[in-house]
Structure formats: C-alpha cells, structure tokens
Length: 183
Image (cartoon, rainbow, N blue to C red; front, side, top):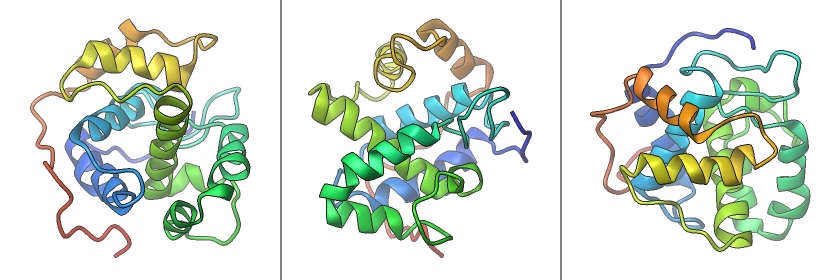
C-alpha cells in the first residue's frame, strides 16, 4: 500500500464521508449508521486512513475498492440508474469511468463505497445497514458485503482497528446540512 497524508477519523468523516453521502441523499438516503459503516470500512481497509494502494493487489483508495468491483458497479448498476450515476459522476475530477480515480479522489471513493453497500447489501441481500453505534453488527455487515466470506479480513480485526484508531467519541451529523462537497 502506498502511504498518504493522514486524516484524523473526525476530519475524514466531516470532510469526506458526510459530504459525499449528502450528495447521494436524494437517491440513497443519508444516515449516521451509513457514515459510521463507511468510516469503519476505510479505517480498517487502509490501516488507519493511511494507505491508498494495496501491496500485491489491485485495491485502490482508502476504501480499498478493486477496479473489477468499480467497473461492475458502473456497468451493471449505475448504468441503469441515471440520476444516481450523474450524482456520482459529478464527483469525478477526470472524465470517464476509470477506477484510477479511487486512489486520490476521496469524495468519489466514498460515494462509490456507499453505492457498493447500497447495491450489494440493501438491494441484492435486502439487508439494511446495522444501527448506529452497533460496532459488532457493522463489522459483520462489512465482512458479508464488502470483504465477502472469501476475503481474508475478520470482523474481530475490523473492531480492533476501530478501537486502535480512536474512532470513538466522534461528532456525526444527524442529517444533511448545507454542505457542499464539490467546493
């Protein structure tokens, strides 16, 4: 994994995750639980919001999304949801739908991670995101819908990473406020 400048969990939540989710609010809906799940995913996958590229693997960005997953979301999900696709596309800094943007465009990567959870967890599996502050259930949801049963990650490691990177006591927005993620 390539090292990057560090975010604090609060900064990543307030400056990246919440603005991205607020932009998706009309299509997917905003929730503190989704914000917390995305933060936990990024903390775990990037080893504390530090690494943007997997060593010896294809995953990119702080959420560690693989290019194949990125392409599948665009080709088999967003291609049939024009409004959601346009919202996600508005976060891109470059034209096209290359997965390379996941590595250095955190707003886009957060939106794609949320779309992935929405598609796989909520639409395909009919499984709602676990309640806010239910770390055990969120770690199981991450394993089932992000890492998958075949992945090397474990819910116990997800929970340990959450604790070790001091992701407790954070301030979450109750609703989307007048945040502008593209400015």
